[in-house]
Image (cartoon, rainbow, N blue to C red):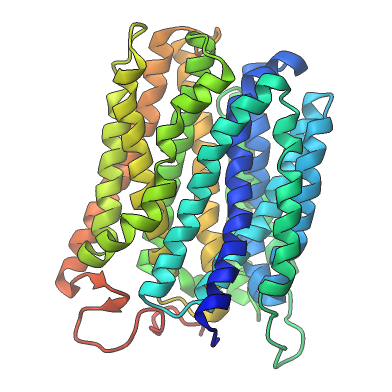
Length: 483
């Protein structure tokens, strides 16, 4: 696609506006959880579902959403879910019962599952491979972090008045982004062949399987063992059936050959573990500061602001580091900082001042800047244009499954450590929960180090090209082209 610089960056601005709204939506809700619990009378398990309902819809439909962008057009799969996302984000503010809020969050999660991979694939197919695309992806990921950071502050201020404004406030900016997207998001090229065949059986099977997998992780902390085992067994059986269906389907939803891309698979696993640690940590931090220390929502918002440092660092610091050291080394450095940030809080005490917490929070924000964007670059590099949506869907599925895993694992550990009582009141429960994000990023770090050792003979990818003697630009390799 040939584009002048101005339209490309205007397009990026619109896509960043959408992902910013998604980030601010999550950030505002995080600090509004205690007021929501107070008014709607939710237990800790039900409160978790206010977050997990969104994650369930997001993770369950992400693979289908990513492939739909490839088959039915990236523009359509971006604009329509964005409009529905806008409506149901507002409807969440009208909820009078917990199930209403959870249902609204589930629908917005499903919309995000179609919108996010479509937006990512619009970037990877609109910007030429190399430094320009990498910078666009890093700006895109930094904008998401910026939305989360501003959401923390705005959520604290809005929920101090009424938590419902957390859902009403984004309506106007979301409408502006939607109106700006119509003229700027490029039209999809006219199909050169008959309408694509839809792998309906595969779509239904994998969506139900992923939904059940996420549900298994979500309910592991509080559901009976037999129920958890049953949903897990059903999910695994459906995944096995999905693989058999895809092997025989003439137009599969998921071309299994794409999983031969080691960078994509490695990025997905590291993304799952890193996101799980991040979401688990922030869930603990919010409830610890508000319920254990008695801080207000606004105070908590400003306290967690250092975690949003990636909004500034992702587009400014990360690109030169990637050019100098390569994606893998930057990701490994970020995972190391995340492990240090979480470990910093392991000995947290009741007498800790905010000055004692600040370095750990800043390390987490810096880690996000170094990991999130480069993972997206690694996962989509050398993937054919017709499968960019699928690659994005796979990556974002791992992110959301990681978020579900992090929330559930942290809840389970802190509940067990608290003896079944309010898990965030005993300081020992909080410390026990912190082991989960620390262990998750340490495992991701080991995977990253192994990947770095594996790449050493061929040397690193720098400045958008492979330094292996080949003149083929990144993004055009044939390793993962459809067969």
